[in-house]
Every structure is written in structure tokens, then in C-alpha cells.
Image (cartoon, rainbow over all chains, first blue to last red):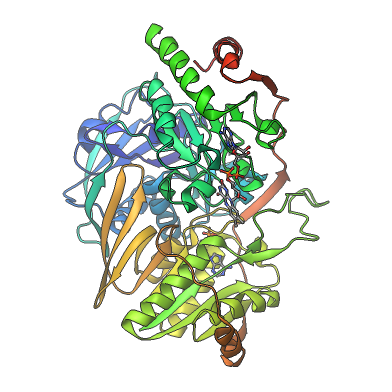
Length: 319
Length: 250
Ligand SMILES: Cc1cc2nc3c(=O)[nH]c(=O)nc-3n(C[C@H](O)[C@H](O)[C@H](O)COP(=O)(O)OP(=O)(O)OC[C@H]3O[C@@H](n4cnc5c(N)ncnc54)[C@H](O)[C@@H]3O)c2cc1C
Ligand SMILES: Nc1ncnc2c1ncn2[C@@H]1O[C@H](COP(=O)(O)O)[C@@H](O)[C@H]1O
């Protein structure tokens, strides 16, 4: 049986959802899964990973502040120690930063943002987007270690794995880059790429203040939704660029994407067309967004959104 | 300080994907090309850093000779020269082979600070920057939205799901640039004229020992035909019903 090493992101002992999905992707190939974790709470988190599909977990100890280059060296060493055939991380900010470094240390190519992973001979095959998802490539690699990152919200976590054997390993101290501070977002504010529901606004929202009604709609989902934006909105300075969805923003695939006052330009569609269900609210019945929407309402956002917020609140409070 | 900005020539963002007859690559007939969006931000940051700290800026790309246009456009904004590592098959060079060739050229150039884009908008790898840094054993910060360069060190802020991270690095370093870091300038007429006289070196790129192999390329399945539920706020109950009972997302 081949082994896949998975870098698991955690904070305060809880694994990031995208990392659990990544463990699920590795487990589903029938490989033995070895998790690597670092940071405060890593040991506590490691003990919970058996159910999530890991049979071993390596906890890097003694590292005080996170260094991506030092961590990459430690992770690559685990890949080598375990004679792993694969290395995976979530395609999160941390995973996308770390995985290319680990791949380079293994002198292997990396496949980023994969949407499927399967065993192929004694290696693996993935599908991944080109041109922000306008085309989908199936790829294999001749590298000794198959390295990939998995797109959040695509793979299913495992909850009925087995037991996990936890090991400790002293981590490398003193990297060339060190994280010295993190300005955390207000509690409960989800990232647009990780949220199961995205409420996105476009130029049709008229101004920055009017996004308050989209914030309320997002809040109605009870902590499951994030606010997103079109580039027109970000360029106008109404919303931060971290919320931009599209080819030059973030590619998202939430279960539910609600586009409000967004026309549906090709660069925007590239960033959200793989969403589970798409709802469009636009006053122009001919807006291209309706071509990709499962459900559309033709109407004024300022009339439809408050009514929708009330209706969602009612549904969520019932369940 | 020897500053380099790496740019990639990519298809314009409004192109439609069409699969070529080999069912493994894009049919690029009729494509327009551009400097990848984030690389414009990298070029701007390189020039700003030179203006603040001194030194010179070179634009570096692995591409076909057609990239002369894009490289000249970047030089016109205030860089001092450009290098094209010529590879007619640059679109099929994988991120590792790209990073290796860039890393050896950067060593030869004596680069000390290298700016790249967060991601090139063709293959969406977001990998070349940290891979180059790893091959060079340099520091690297990705997705940078704020940067302060000091003497032999720099402090960068990067956007993550958790919030804004502050990262301190020792130089030399690779910085991958995200939207928000700066507003790229336009080249003036003077810059465009001056760019014609600045050195643009063409050199053969080291052979690509690609590990990535594409088995097939397909267009995403079209989304199932949707429907307009109705008009205005009156349509909300029907939408809720569809989301609950049909789509089952509520
Ligand atoms: C290189 C490049 C990269 C790009 N990358 C991206 C990207 O990553 N993401 C992105 O989004 N765009 C991107 N774009 C921009 C893209 O081409 C569009 O310009 C942009 O998406 C338009 O944003 P919008 O839909 O908010 O605005 P508009 O196109 O102006 O649409 C506004 C919509 O709001 C509707 N409306 C107006 N008032 C109301 C109301 N009261 N109620 C309901 N509806 C209303 C209108 O009918 C219209 O459909 C890129 C462009 C280029 C050139
Ligand atoms: N062929 C290339 N020539 C020069 N720089 C490149 C090339 N490919 C990628 N890069 C740089 O690496 C960044 C990230 O590219 P990628 O990892 O392919 O998404 C780009 O924004 C460029 O700065």
C-alpha cells in the first residue's frame, strides 16, 4: 500500500475543514495517510485525526513562530522518512504557499487546486482547472513523489476512519521567513473560498454602504455565509480585494452562490461557475449571469434582498 | 540592488477555451495575449523599490520571441532592461521546469530581490515563486499586499483566510504580488521611446525536463439549464421552495 503525507492546518487543536477534506481525498485513494501538523494545539489535534482517515500523525515540536521554509523542510523530511508516494495539502493560503516548497525539495512538479484525485498505477492522477476553470486538465506526473493541493469545498472528509499513531519530531527552528504577527479577522467571519454559502454583490449595489443588506443576508445563514464581490466593486473600493471572485480574484465553489447586481462577465463566471447552486438577482432579464444561474429573480436588489433575508431567517431558525 | 520582475505572457482573460484536436491542449488560434495580471503588480513594485532604494530592474520571462512586445511594455514603465529565455513551447513547460530555469538565470544575473505574480492566469499554478525560492534556498513571501524593504531584510503582509499575516524575511527573497499591493502605472511616451534603446537580451532557455503530463483536456460540463423563478420580492417564496426541495441547500 502506498503512503500519502498530508499537511494538516490547525489552530488551537482544531483542524481546518479544508485539511479534513484533503485527508478525505488521500484516504479515498486507498493509501495509508500520514498527517503532519505544527503549531500550538498540534498534539491535541493529531489525536483526533484517526477518525478523519490518518493512521499516523507527525507533530512538529519546538517551533515557536511559523516559518514556511523551515516547515517545508520538515514536511519534506517526513515525506522521505515515510517513503511516501504522494504529498497533499489544502489549496488554502497556507497550503498553496507551503506545497510548492515541499514539491521543490522533493524535486517534484506540483498540481495546484485539484478537484479530483485517484490512484493510477503506483502513482496518482488529478483533474485541475486551466484558465480559472474554463478548461479542465487530467494530469499525471513522472516525479517520484506526486504533489498536489486540493481545492476547498470539493472533497468529502472521512468521519469513520480508524485509530491514529501520534509521533513527535523536533521541527526546524529559524527559517528565512517568519510569521511575526497575525491580525485575525473578527470571529465568525468566513473566508469567501471556504464558506458553504457566498452572497456576492456587484456594481448594481450602487455604493459601499448598500452592502449592509448583503451582510444581513449572509448573517441570516447563521455563520455559514461569506460576502463576495465582483471586480468592479473591489476596484471602486467598496469591498476589500480579499473578497473578489473571478479569474483575477478567488475561484470559489460553495454549495450556494447568490449573485446580486452582478452582470456575469466571463472573468467573473470563471470564478464561480463550479458552485453547487447559483442564484442570480438582477434587474436586467438579459444579464449573462442568468445563463449560469439555476434560479433567477429579475428585480431590484433593494427590494428582493430584504425579503429574501427575512425568508432565510425564518427557514434557518426553524431548523 | 539588483531587482528582477518575472513576467509571463498569457492568453487574455476574455478568451474562450477551445480544446485542440489532440484533446490535450488548448486551441490557441486567434488568441490575444497579455502580461499576466499580477505580473503588472510585480513590475510596479520592482520599479517602486528601485525608486526608493536605488539599483536596477530587469524584466525576465520564459516565452516565445513574441513576448518582446510585453517585455518592452514593462521596460517602458521604468525598468532598465529585459531578458527573454526563449522557449517556443513555453505554454507546456511545467511549474518545476519553469522554476528551475528561472532560478539558474537569477543566479547568473546576481539578483537580490525578485518580484513575481501571485499566480499566472493561464495554468493557475501559483507555484513558480515559492519553487524558485526553494531551489535558490532564499526566503519567499506569497500573496503580498504590503511591503517594506529595509537593509538586508524586508517585512511583508499577506492575506490569509485567518486574516492579515506579517512576515519578516532576510534578503535575498522572492515576493509574489497580490492585488492591493500597488496600482500599476501606465508607460508614458518618454518611457516608451526610452525602452527602445534599453537592452533586451534573448538567450536559449535550458531544456524543459517536464514531469507533468496532460492526459486529456476537456471543457467543463455545461450547467443544467436554469430558470427565472419570477420578478421582484414576490418571487422569494418560490425561490425558497426551490432551494429547499429541489436543490436541497437550505
Ligand atoms: C484582465 C481582467 C480581469 C478581470 N478579472 C475579474 C475578476 O476576477 N472578477 C470579476 O468580477 N471581474 C473581473 N473583470 C471585470 C469584468 O470584465 C467585469 O467588468 C466585472 O465583472 C463587472 O462587474 P459587475 O458585474 O459588478 O458590474 P456590471 O457589469 O456593471 O454589472 C452590474 C449589474 O447590476 C445590475 N443592476 C444594476 N442595478 C441593480 C439593482 N438595483 N438591482 C439588481 N441589479 C442591478 C445591472 O443590470 C448589471 O447587470 C476582469 C476584467 C479584466 C479586463
Ligand atoms: N514562463 C515564465 N516566465 C517568467 N516568469 C514566470 C513564468 N511562469 C511563471 N512565472 C512567474 O511566476 C508567477 C506565478 O506563476 P504560476 O506559478 O505559473 O502561477 C508568475 O506570475 C510569474 O511572475
